[in-house]
Length: 99
Length: 477
Image 1 (tube, rainbow over the protein chains, first blue to last red):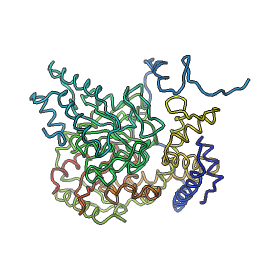
Image 2 (cartoon, rainbow over the protein chains, first blue to last red):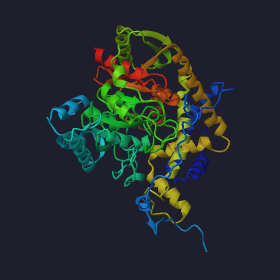
Image 3 (cartoon, rainbow over the protein chains, first blue to last red):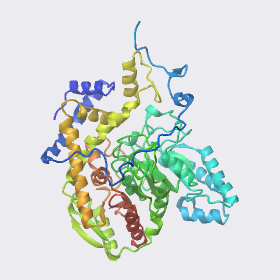
Image 4 (cartoon, chains in turn yellow, green):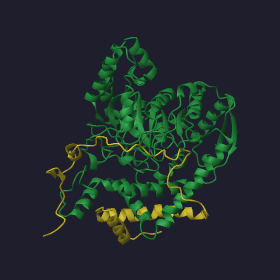
């Protein structure tokens, strides 16, 4: 597996990351290296093996359900306290819709 | 009082006999930790006000004749990926440099309810991604045993504060070995409980199907006491388990005679000879206690690293998408449009390893590669978990090394991410299958570097794991 700079830029776009040209070259090299190693998994025949998405152990069927009760949650002020820019009780972001 | 070697038992006795108050102990612990921190950079933030308030509650309960809790007055360090209300939580990242959480993690809430005193937040690899603590945006941690070496990672700070004596116990998090490996490098006890044993509520998510919170301590009993205080069902984490929490202190007293442990041959290839010798001595000590030692095979071990780094990076790319420059992270000055705000804030805020894993995860999940990488890795995860299930039909526990080598020098592996990933080989299998596992100190190399022995048991058999660890600790040479 050999990744081109162009592929790296495409994936960076998917991940919403701005990368410098140096970073693009470095990650093209690193990811190619790591992905080649990962091809080793193809040595294993996994036909008929279920994918494991979560750790499972014996539990009651309703183990993940709880009573539907209203409990206090974060206040508006607390929720906004770490925002870089807020106002009027909202998070502020650059203009999305042009008039 | 030797503050650097205190145990929970000594603190309990000291408080009961009024040799010191919890407030006095906290003041002394804070002063000592601050004075020592320049050597290791293990703490990122000290929480004096919170610590003294917790200690005052313990003293008030003692004065009123009430039970002050199992962790009364115990100075605790908490890894900086676990949120603490009103105390800065950075995740070792520039992107969260000024983040002050508005809530507490469940583990934090429980340890404070039990009388624990949080004296500070400990350094770690950025978002817990790393094996050396060199990926912290706030500088590496130095290993207190050998200051030119890494403490391991990602919970390097939590291991270092316990080894250095600047906390009695600490909380870390483990996704692929991030508690056990630094515990082995720093010569302390580190426990990764069963997946779901401790609520992940308030643990900043890295790889949700693999993340665990667990304790560090200087002895097995203290680690068990801390785990017991924080374990158990929490409705705020749907993956937390309803299984009753065992009385570890009682099970630890039982002798080992009649237990069977398995030695998987795949874990002894490519081991540094010094490390291997120590583990073999450890196994001999267990044999002398009447443990039956059985050779076993875990045939899919060799594929664990590849499966792990696909699954964990896929989950990273999803989990870290919440850091977007809007709600709780720095926003780039160059945010002239919404999309540039996201991209610039993330590009400037994340460090090299976080970006590398986000990219890898986005790639393995991207169109055309999902089946080849992500689904394939999840199938291999099933096979690795099956290896454990089959082994535990024959044995009560598995004994293995924690790391192929002891603590390495700062800078030694930092430029080769693949080599760094490969060093996680012996800890990743336990993480993938969700079984409880721990590192217990097991001698040292000729250079005096600590070696850790790993004990793994089946899901929710922490009682057996602690029993073996404690009896080993009592009887090791």
